[in-house]
Structure formats: structure tokens, C-alpha cells
Length: 429
Image (cartoon, rainbow, N blue to C red; front, side, top):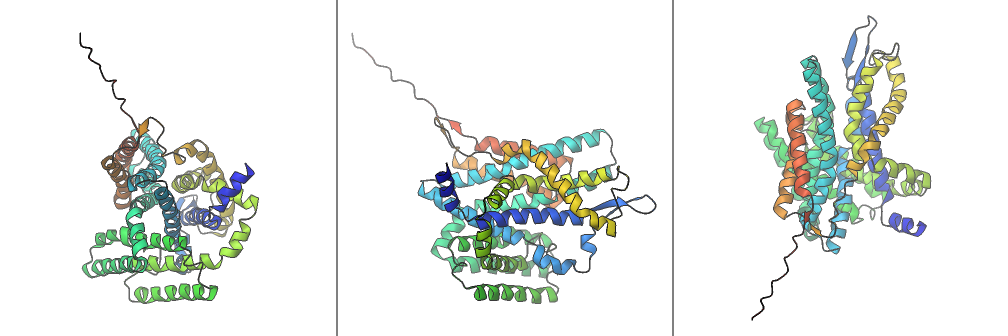
């Protein structure tokens, strides 16, 4: 068993595992500081966004907007898995099916939960404005599922282009993203920017391919720091010209070119820190903590915001537990609330862990579904989170999303092989 464990660790970049867990936890911390629910001096309920009100917030997003790094890390994992699958004789359909199932199953549980809760709230005649506000906030992280699934399904194509022409592929994605931004800014048609779900996030994912090829590891620390600094400097002219917001969270949907530059800077800085982080991950305690959280990363990401909202609501019922947002007492309470939220999310993850651990293995006596079914299943899994990204979550989208995600999982299920009937032998008399 120790030998098997050592072999598994030897095949993994533990720094990538650590970085992915850190990204997820940072998202939780940021949302915890962005959602302010409390009571003012008169006892009235106050709802605000304290973090965004801070004068340093925009500058902090140039560091705290870590989604480009998350997509790059996802690209590293995806291209590594794709290359391994190819060596075993797997196909693009096999890869897309596995990626779809591992994202659709956790999403199905969440959409079903929202459908039940919003349905019950509607039947109980809860204030529709309150229900709409809470649902829209709780569904905010779902945009990630749409963008991540889209570029993950493109991995077989983009990995092939990367193998043949890595520089041309990367620069083409960057040029396409800049062109989309130019059309969006000049025309004023915001939805044109949705094309950058492919180009911006595809570029960030491609950085993970370069990381898998050890391109960044072959650069010296001064080179990496210089490249990161150049990426940050290149972000400034577009912001100064008013083409992009100085708030990198605003540049998220639709995704814009500064996020590509952020991705370059972040993957460079991660590479600079690779040696000390590797030393940290040599500890069994660190490995255990990272693997424990990492095995529930999608559950933590999808469920942390509903948990934060519920915890914030419950504090209103406890005297002194809900200070006015942005007050000194409110900021001082954040560490305690973070521990509570993470504890509740852990409890939630116990029954939900099996949804995240869904297996794409095809057992003996079965075959994988046909390629057409795999493609349709991926499209069905993409539609619900994309719709939430565009129109915000409500009861109708929760119900439709539950149905479409369930259909996606059914289409991707293994098919039983048809047993051929034994041949009938004619006997001449």
C-alpha cells in the first residue's frame, strides 16, 4: 500500500493540487466578505457588499481574481488526463463524456435542491422579491460550470493544436479574444463578449498545457517575475482607456482580455514558488489536508454561497450575532463565521461526496454511449449554468436545469451490450 501511494504521488504535481484548493478557499473567503447581512443601531436589517465598498477593493482584485489561474490548473489536469487516455486507446468522446459526468452530477444535486427550496418558498408565499434576490445571489457561482465545461470539452481539439503549433494556438486565442473585446466595446453589444468564453478561458486553459510541458519550469525566477510584471503592465493601458474596468471581478462576465494577462502573471508566480510549495507538500499532513478538501472541491465551490446566505440569515435570530455590515464588529466576526461556514459545508459534503465521485468507467458487459449521445449530453449539461449566468437563477430555471442535467446523465450512462442469439442449426432428414 505505501508503494502504491508513493507511485500515485510521483505521478502528480502536488503543487497544482495545493493551488486548486487554495483557489477554492479564497473564493469562499471573498464571498464571505462580500455578503453583508446584519442589524443597524435601530435594529433594522441591513444588506450590503462591504468588501466592494473598500477603497482598495479594485486594486485587490488584481491579485484576488484567481479564476484565470483556476482555468490554467484545470488545463494542466485535463491535458494530462487526455494524454493518458490516448495512450490507453481512449477517444475524444470518452474524454468529453467523463468530463461532462463529473461536472453534471454535482450540478444536478444543486439544481434539484434549488428547485425544491424555491418551489417550497413559492408555495409558502414568501415575499417574491426576497426569494428572487436570494436565488440570484446563491446561483452566482454557477457561471463557472458553463465556462469550465465548454473549454474542457474542447481539450481534445485544443490539445491537438497545441501539439502541432503551440505558439500559434496561444497567440490565435489571444488575438481572437482582443478582437471580440474590440467589437464589444465599439458596438456596445455586450453579448458579443460571450464568444470569449471560448477564447479567454481557452487561452487560460492553454497556459496549463504549457505548464504540463514544463515550459514555465524551464524559465529562471527572474524571467518569470519579469514576465508576470510585463503582463500586469500590459493590463493598465486598456483600463486607463476605459475599455476595461479596474475591478477584475467586473471583467469576469463576459470574460475580457485582462484575464488572459492575469493568467500569465499567476502561472508565472506559481512557477516561481514551485520549489518551496513542493517542500510544503512533502508533509503528510499537508497532503492529507489538500486531498481531503480537493476531493470535495466542487461541492465546496457549488454549495458555499447557499451556506453563507443561510448562516447570515440565522445570525439575525441570535442576539448580538449579526453586527452591522462593514462595522468593526462585523469585520472582527469574519474569522468565526468562516469557521462556521466551512464546518457546515463539510457536513453538507458528507452526503454529497458521492455525486462528486461519479465514475465514468464502463463495466464489463456494457459499452459507452454513441458519440452523438455524448455530444448532446454535454450540450444539455452546459445549458442550465449558462442560462443562470445570463438570466439569474429562479424556480423555472432550477426546474428546467434539473431536468436537463438528469437527461445529460442518462444519455452518458453505459449501455448494456446486446447478446447475440445462438445460431439455429437445420438438420436434413
